[in-house]
Amino acid sequence: MEEIQELDILSKDDLAGIEAQTDIHLKKLLSGVQFYRESPISWNFSDIAPYIPPRSSFLNTSIIDTTHGIRHILRVMIYSNLIAQLLGENSTPAIVAAAWHDLRRQNDFSDKEHGERGFSFFYANKALFKDKLSDFEIDLVAEAIRYHDNKTYESNNIYLKILKTADALDRYRLKNEPGWPKLERIPLKEGIKFAYLFHNFTLQTEYSFLECKNSLCAIKKHLDIVGGINDT
Ligand SMILES: [Fe+2]
Ligand SMILES: [Fe+2]
Image 1 (spheres, rainbow, N blue to C red):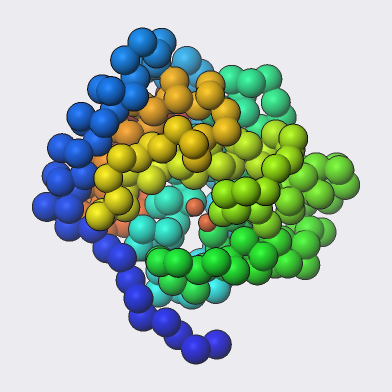
Image 2: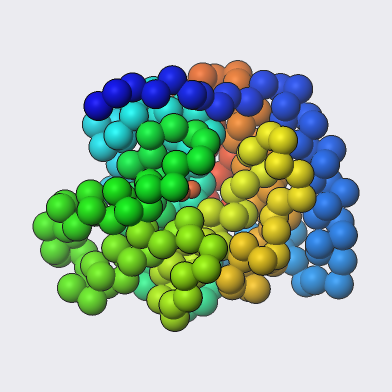
């Protein structure tokens, strides 16, 4: 594969700029919404730990620590877990879809085929989940991965809706893109209630990464914001 060296790494100044922009936007977005100031659910990190993808599963290993790398994937897994539990859905398919959704990215920018590549990659490895997911759930997860970045594809697949919602609620980390989260990219309106909590978690974990230079450590440091217990 040709290695593409387009990387997107945030600095402290980038994060401060994003924080100032999103502060104004969030106040407007959440006015009149009963949003969560603390997590309505407490959960254990060991619930998601078995599904964390290994480094070798990334198509381009040079983006593991950038804006679409492992911190993004871990946050989308955590957000999907919370949303699925809140909706009373089985959280395992939601966690798996989040874990695999961006693994086949070539770069941090416009990579329109990464959903399709992720879909093929997941199907090729579906035997990994034969004891965890039913055949029907495998199909739902595969569809969610395939279409997560498609703005027009319509489906009642709850795991696609959860993934799109969780993915959109982590988009504060993108510089030069003010106005996130955008309501039209959030199919589950329940998800809006998490906007404040997820905003805090995304930014705090990005700040921490600049200090500790270790993605897993940065995520684990702030689990309490989203109701997580570090039990691993
Ligand atoms: Fe994606
Ligand atoms: Fe994503």
